[in-house]
Structure formats: C-alpha cells, structure tokens
Length: 112
Image (cartoon, rainbow, N blue to C red):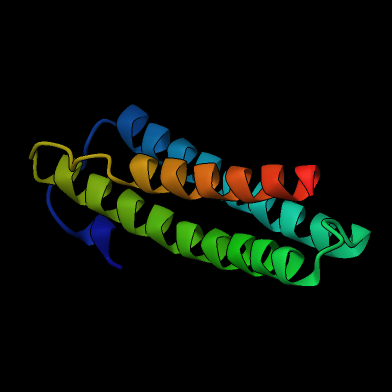
C-alpha cells in the first residue's frame, strides 16, 4: 500500500501516533495468539470441543484483527494526507463483541 506517495505530508507527530496505535493493535493480537497457545498447551478447558473452539477462534480472530489493524492504519494515514475526516472506529466494536463471546465460553468452561 503506497500511502506515503499519496497526498501531502502530515505533521510527523500524527503519523507516528497512527503507527503507535497500529502497534498497540498488533500487541493485542499477539496476546490473543498467546492465549490460544496457552489454552491448547494447558489442555484447558477439558472439554475437547470447547477448547478447540476457543483456540481456533482466538487464533483466527488474532490474524483477522492484525489484518484489520493494518487496513485501519492505511485508511487513517490516507485521510490525514488528504486532510479528510478520519474514518469511524468500527474495529473497536468488533473486538468487543468477539471478546465478550470468548469470555462467555470461558465462563461456561469454568463452571462445567
């Protein structure tokens, strides 16, 4: 994605802040992948289908979130370079809904 060749150069502070935000999303993705590995390694929950669902769900969502974070970074960088309004923050809602669903599955596993 050649966002740096498009539009006018914004204030470097804004570009660097956008990059830091992208890296924060990548950190969150790594935490999800580590959680998936931990659940798999510790064989928790003991119910195989539930553990598999959680591990695969966390791993796939981690990869998807990483790609969406990059897409969001590029959209914001492009908007800043064209002096347009920043795009809406839809990724936060997606992450919240998925993490609530995973939390519910973990709670069910702890009770069972």
